[in-house]
Amino acid sequence: MIVCAHRYTVRDVDRRSFKVIDSKRAMLGMCYILESDLTLPPDTNIGANNILVVREAIQGKKLSVIHNFEDHNKYGVCQVGTAVTWTKNTTEDYALFGAPGCFTWRGNLLGQKTGSISKYQHAVGEDNFLEFRKHGHMGLSVVSGKFYNKREQFVAGAPHVIRGERGTGEIYFYQLNPISDSLEIDNTRTLSGGSFGAGYGFSLAVLDANGDGLDDLLVSSPFSDNNDKGGAVFLYLNEDDSLHPDTFLEIRGSGPEGQFGLAVTSVGDINKDGFDDFAVGAPYEGAGVVYLFLGGVDGVSGRKHGEKWLKAKEVASQLIRAEDFLAPGHIPLPSNFATFGSSLSGGMDLDDNDYPG
Image 1 (tube, helix red, strand yellow):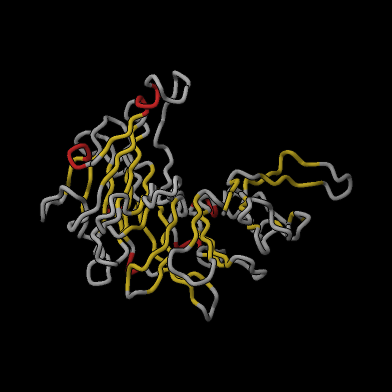
Image 2 (cartoon, rainbow, N blue to C red; image 1 turned 180 degrees about the horizontal axis):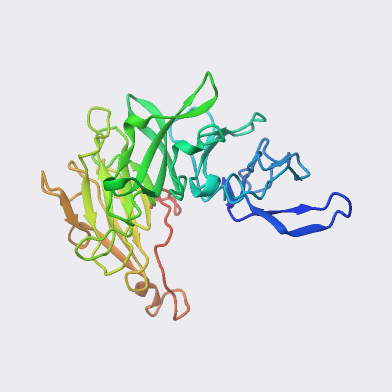
């Protein structure tokens, strides 16, 4: 299990008095990879084995601060662990960490093999950060899957990138180069979408929605300005072992300013029909709603062949509303219970009935 404190802050210490210099601080973030019994690992060396922090900004297990660690133009607000995932298909335990604040919020993607004492791999460094746009927030979402040529790619969303008429938000695809031991971007695969401020790539999920054995990609755009201004998600179906930028299904939210897509997740095959299903959160639609969609031959059950976009309420198999939990007989919740669906996770069989949820 990985747990992160993405707002973990380091403060500098005066070398003579050893007093904390409160004005010099850096919100670096820190992640722990816990044992199966949720205990801390025995080795507590920073940046080694089971703990990850930006080692360019601090060094050693005693958190010895190096020069300009608080520089926000580099590592000062990296916020490692804003997004995190285990890689999906690798045979080794390899973890991905999003750090959207690095290099003036250009963002970063870090990867490390569990238990490794070698330095983690990174996508953005001082040698290439100028290739990325400021304030793009790459690493706000991270996933992995086999989307091209049956090789595993590491995927990072940069929902606030602006590139002229291409709109806002991009999805970057990386691969681990075993020779150079680095994360290398494949610029030919970059996905772009959404209108200005739509937040394309805010959340990502990997699933096999149409049951063909290939990884499909679900991309959210929670601030999308469709007719109902309720957000949207885009489902890219893997065809011929490839994702095609112009071939996707758009599902539009219906609640005004509901931010449909602020969170998305695969929930596994909950009805055992051979298609992976998924959930989408709309936390500002009323007190919050979670939409459940069933997969199908065309990606989503209820979709007619060839349809380019759908209304969420017309094809969702179930809507779980915050108000449902306030009804008599449920667990008591505060009357101001709200933003239900802000984060989601699925695919676990918690009650051991052979059905994921």
